[in-house]
Length: 125
Image 1 (cartoon, rainbow, N blue to C red):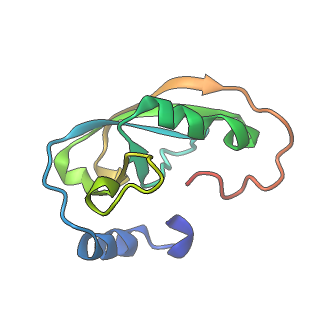
Image 2: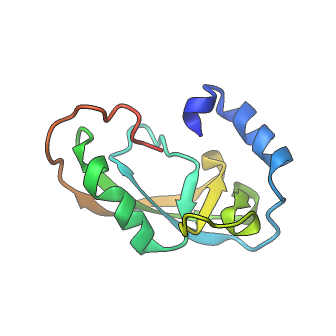
């Protein structure tokens, strides 16, 4: 998603128009990604920690500094939409969030860097 627009606010506004409105409660969400810098998290999160771990391991571990599993409190107003509302074809239980509204983001687990760094510049989403 991030590569489609360098303007996250524009992307978020567009998704709020295009996706069915999220009407659920706030949730604890997880994300597997390369080690974040400056609280730069992607929009895609899951409510299943095993799915987050799958994303944190493997190719994302090649990112400089390795990878992590993040946990965040996502209030309902931070959740833009959920794949369950439009068909969860990849079975990722994905929630798209406005990362600026996430609360209490913490690292649950770290994975060391493995292999080389080629093709890792875009591995945060």
